[in-house]
Amino acid sequence: MDGKRPYLAVILIRIIYAGMFLFTKEALNVGMNAFVFVFYRQAAATVFLIPLAMLFEWKSAPPMSLAILCKIFMLSLCGISLSLNLNGVAIKYTSASLAAATANCLPVITFFFAALFRMEKVKLRTIPGMAKVAGIAVCTAGAAAIAFYEGPHLKLLLHHHLLGHHSKEHHEVHVPSNQTWLKGVFLMLLSNTTWGLGLVLQAQVMKCYPSKLLFTTLQCFLSSVQSLIVAISFERELDQWKLGWNVGLLAVVYCGLVVTGVTYYLQAWVIEKKGPVFLAMSMPLSLVLTILVSAFLFGEIVNLGSVIGGILLVIGLYCVLWGKSKEQKMDDGMPSTSDVEKECSDSKEAVAIKSPPPILL
Image 1 (spheres, rainbow, N blue to C red):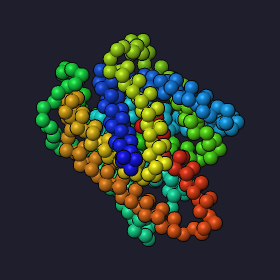
Image 2: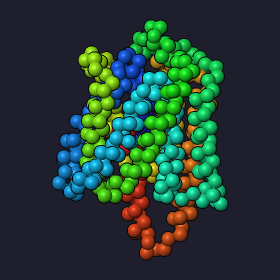
Image 3: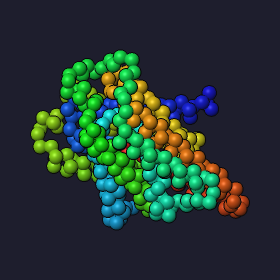
Image 4: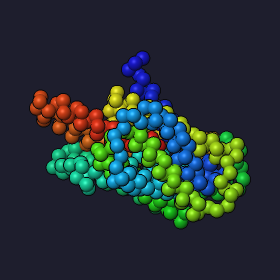
């Protein structure tokens, strides 16, 4: 049974993320402002994380200088606030299935920026190196397929609207115009790009401030303040700020507490047991779950272009992960015995740094 626990944990993680995409889309469908939703989500995550950070890391945390605080502020602005707000607008224009599909290109984007900043090496004369480059090309083709090819709509059985949205306006949200869809795809890719850039820069900042829980809590707090300023700038009506007993409140609580709290622990545990590649390879499961649930229960129409693009994104993801894992195995055979202990400690730090915090998803 112990050997099956990482597999059960990774399935639970992907179910939670699929729920995040679905609840976010439904909250926006019922009229909740995307910028207000991001603020409430980050505020809920901050309230949840502050007691944990105070309890576990406050006494052992290193002192924080003004320079480090400014770096974390800019990192929160780029990797969280900008990414989540762009994602909120994009998912309103498109669909939960597209959000789950484009999430598969995040490891590829992160690798691209890491290679650009010379944190990763691309050996074009080796098969793993060519596989990583091919993966980036396939992901680009997948994104292009989603953006420019719609194809026929796939009618999967009957649509049963779980939350009872049968109005014409709700149906139109699921079938956006070509211009709206293209705009949403562009914003979604831009969101993932800023997210990936933030993850790469985060690796450098965390070398100066390694207290991970306190670091994450501070990011959540700063992104809450930043998102509040954005939300106030775009939404002045008080009615849009009121939370009722509806799917909007459920989405805020779910994203702020469940996604942040449960997946933060589960992802760290899975990475410790099976490594980051094992966790990343499970990402397409969120896409499959999101497509099935959104089509069968929420009445979301899935088109052939999204399916083809999603498949290409998954293939590109696996190409990059395969190349990366092969290079790691080749590198692991190179060092001498005296360097093993140092490399093990470095690898644990790298895993903790490179694995994306669940609050960003």
